Image 1 (cartoon, rainbow, N blue to C red):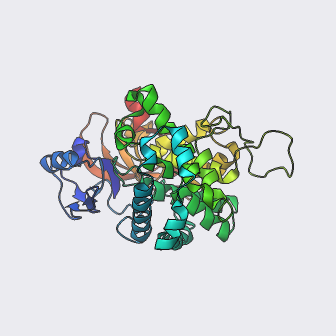
Image 2: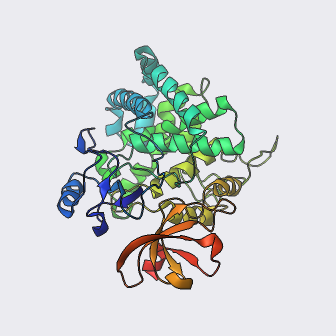
Image 3: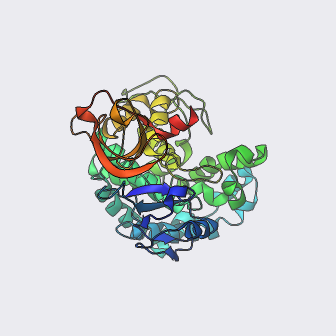
Length: 401
């Protein structure tokens, strides 16, 4: 199995492995469908941009999405949708105001109390706790790949960030209770987006007007205002909502805070309060999840490509030590990664990573399915660990060269 872009011409003839759903939840295509170019066009018109398929190059590859929206993780997605639907109704009037007036207005809204009264907050907390318990054991072999579509930029994104933040937090040594609170803070990290018009959220960042971009960035301030009543009960929630777009260098928003680029924190410091560790963990999860998922105006990156970007941002945008721990568990060539081979008998051939290197992760088994001139061949597995003359090159970099 591997994930492919629905626009890729090679999707024609592949076997759909997982159901494809519309934003409302309706099934657009069932697993087992043999995709055609015509079916791919129809799915694209319904907002589908990525799909999980199987072809000769990916038979037997154990690929699983970060979030199983129709399986174990369905409960937390439904709980989040129910909670956010109630919050959206409660903030409908403030959402029409300027950010400063909306924040003032939110002080008089008993949003959290109403969530408690309906039981939705407790239901979400319980579902998120179950998510956290499962996420500790998520395998990094497939690169934490997602299957959400570009239109699912709130619910699916938030649950994906929660799952990944827990996996990162576990690698840092956070305890079970800390991981549960991290997961809850992560599912709420974009709560302020409920007060950002959908038109702005759906507009590619490069096409937003300055006013639209300001409102988009203000989701951090608005989310903190919504969650502020939880400060005593769950202090991480408003903090993460506020800080998850801050950067280590001080170049983030909304307050230009700086980070320590460390995991362990000094007991006392005379400097301005740094970005909290839980916010830095969620920031990394948020950044990575968005890169490997499609967005308006942007295609989904492969996990290998996203890994390279994350590595380059450690120390400036993201906490360097947290990034280093993340890269320790994330293979350089995750399962399902498409590569070109340089050197040896398969010079220029195209293949898919089908097995990780058991020792160093950098010399996987690659299933070659296409020669350098584009000719399809019967797939052949090439073990790079036994052929040092061969070097894998990521397809995205090779195409740009």
